Length: 98
Image (tube, rainbow, N blue to C red; front, side, top):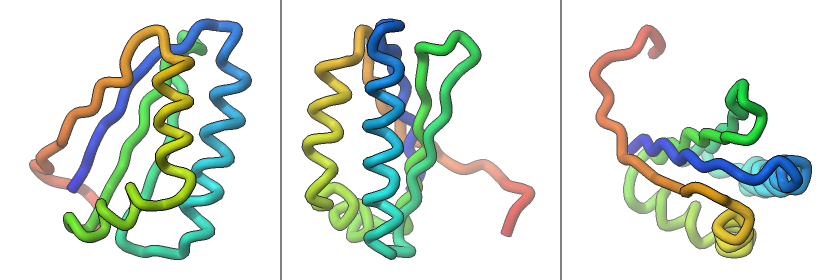
């Protein structure tokens, strides 16, 4: 299961959002759960962000969403975003990887 999450924050909130993203991803890493991955990107405009979330199955998604840091991170994002977040489920067509 793949998801793409996109949003934009005001320029004066970028540094705060970057810290929040790094802290959240540190928590995701610390969970040592191979059933999900979360990757963050900032677009060239400097205020738009994109996340790619991968979960092996619905149980992994439930574990991911039940991380203690998930709800505060999501609520903080909604409070800071001036546009979005918009989430889309992605359907894989093909990949060059394994």
